[in-house]
Image (cartoon, rainbow over all chains, first blue to last red; front, side, top):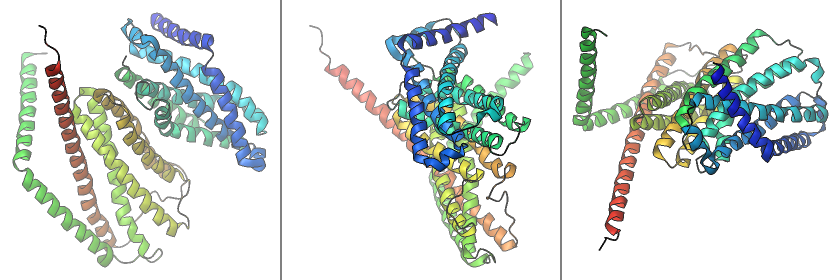
Length: 225
Length: 260
């Protein structure tokens, strides 16, 4: 068990080290996320921005677009110089490779959220102080499902002709149920003043379990050098 | 495993194989008759369903003639679910056995799912225009139905974008499995959440119920027929591609310079 965890940590650290040295993905997705929030804020107009609650949906647009770029970039790194072939030749189970990729994607998406969420709070006058813990739990659980599907299909599309556009097209509709559930829950918490209940959370946990299991099972069949 | 169990297992395996071979032989032998019977049944059941819809079933008191759209809407919706299920089964089958026949089934069923979902959405929108006074409402059932259509349209775009046949089949199989996760959401959405779409509709008259039952026959025949037709088309296209590749490889080997 410790050996498995160590391998996952090694793979995640490798991806994050590459990102720390190149500084390509995170800078790009953070700027993109902020741009999306600014553009949507301008497009929705003063009234919608002042209402505050629109921030929950706007944030998810930023997370989803930025997240897809993260997934694509972390997999594109493996395609350079035959790194993926070497990784597959290593005595590492493909489920461990999936877990490593998922963790590095999650770190990147959470880093994106850490910058983009304060921007939305300021620009949309969104009062997060009402339930910051519930916001973190709902967003975190939703991002886990989103990242697991994104990691799976990033591996699938990295060698196709359409690549980036195709990945977005595949991931968006499959993740929409999670996004819809998450935005509805956040609206219920912040607009209607509902407490985060076990029923709502169990829906998100069920989505996460299904997405994680399907992605983990399918990943090894899709990963090819 | 004991010797009796091994014998039973082998016998069962052989029995299944023999049964499969017998079915295939019978289908090949009686193919023309099957096709003729299918076409005759389809045309007759469609004519009967149309006649029942327009002349046999009474006009509903509240909604008027537009209620007859329901007889088409529900069978297509059920068949859309069945087509999604067939795409899912094909996907799981391919990932399990890596046989191209499963990929043929999955791709054919996904095409039919996209088609039937389109009919469901169009008939539903026409119904909604008269029942609710608007073409569209962002209610859970309608939203997840639109999402289901989008998923299978994306599947159709996904297929030609991957060149390698095995890789295309693997990616599409995984996608078909993931896309099927939306089907329970469509079914359960109006039962579990407040929705403008009714969870179930009770038809008051026996004529209405019979008409609805009559519409299931041509729609199910159409769905099954299209899946089989698309599967055959995929198999033929694969055969042609294999033949072209073999020709290209042969001509390449012919044109290679020989050593003196």
